Length: 450
Image (tube, rainbow, N blue to C red; front, side, top):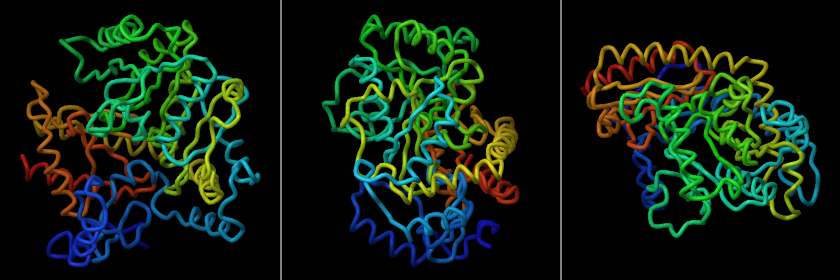
């Protein structure tokens, strides 16, 4: 079966002739702003393997950018969607009730690590929609106008989430942006100023947050502080638990809601069902969780979850949407949760993370271009630098690395403020043999390029 195969390139060049033709059609029909540097035109896929229209097989370390934790075309998810499609595709939840929406909401209410005994969930379609709705809910509950986000953050491409997103290349020429969005420094310990210890750096970053209350908005006007437990586009940077505990304390003292953006880090990716499960264990659970990507194995769906008193503060009509909680997506979401639990994919994520850190860590010792290896569970980033002492970002090198790996059947993707981090987001169903094959392709590419 394809899901058990290894990567292979059978054409003289990639893209092959059929793929090259489709890519040319893409360039003529689709805006160039939707950029793609990869030579892969999918024909079919299973697990962690994509076969293209020319018969080349690519190992997928990108996983739809965190969407495919249970793998491409998991047969049980396919069957669940087919079964649902035979009954009905869609019924807007404001008009008719369908049990899949209710059942998935009930399941998530039991599983998510948000504060409170009684929780409620509603569904949207994308991560950006989830984040925007999370902010609306926080404003409705607190009656406050402003929010705080962080350097390195990525929250989406709607008008509000473009304002929330740090890297403005994602919003070039799109201003003016909504008011009331203020930014503090995220604890990027690898690049903390000076020669601080981790403890000193965390104190520094907490103090930098406190300056926002003085320089931008008083605390009693802040509805929510929005944090990615592990920054995705920002460079796979985990939020230190000691820092999160300090943020939770600031929120509690000032009536501010703590919102965890788990769009990329949810559904087993970090070794827990949600990365904020680590927060819960440390006694600093968030008030709101937003999540998407791997929730439904590629069918568009996102979720916003909070305790009932927060959700029920929202006026009728303020939240909702035509497609949110679509029946096909909810059927996929229910099956995804079943697969993650039954097949112990959180445990598998931890195993993959350990293997990644061991192999990537060995490169740090052997190759001067590897500056840092970090992550949680199977969400691991490798930061490439020109020099390990100066930590100057090796952005150009990473671009070449992506192309070299793709030419040999491995798809990898960059991240980070400087585009110099490679992120590991392979499906959690990847086999050990496939994982090692991917490591070998990547290491051979590094050796060729240095």
